[in-house]
Image (cartoon, rainbow, N blue to C red; front, side):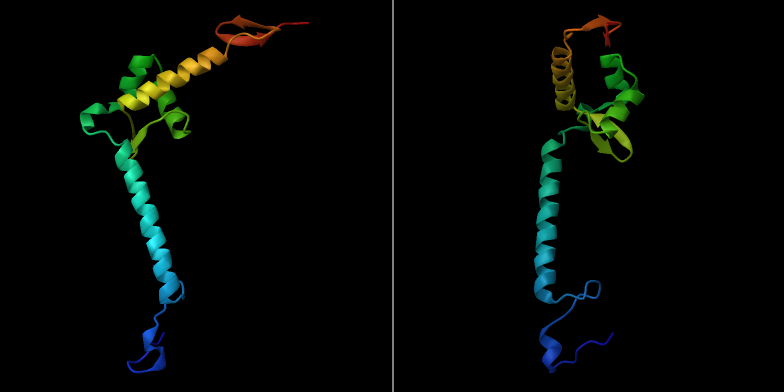
Amino acid sequence: MSTPKEGSADSDTCTCPSTGKGDESTSYELVNSVDELAKAVRALVARSPVLAEELLTADQVGDLFHMSPRTLRDLAACGQIPHRRIGKHYRFSRDDIAAIIQFAEQAQRSASPRAGMTRKGGLSWRTAS
């Protein structure tokens, strides 16, 4: 790939080697990318606890909720409960735990028995007709 020589008509423009686009569109894309990155960083900082001691492991939260740490990690991986990832580790803040409790209370309220259903072993089963 040749570069334009100084003094030539093409020396005022430059193309990106990876995209082949000119300065104006490349600059616009770069500004948009930086803006998106800044928004993502702000969102992460807003959700990050001040101290690492405020984070609990899946084992600790499992003890609180009498649940398997594996189940908690699976729920977190599916996005069903709030959490934070630090590398490959799942961590839970006080806000995350409060949200999990609120979610569980709402689920419990909405799981009330319906007509034609009975409660048995914590699960709803259809009665034989």
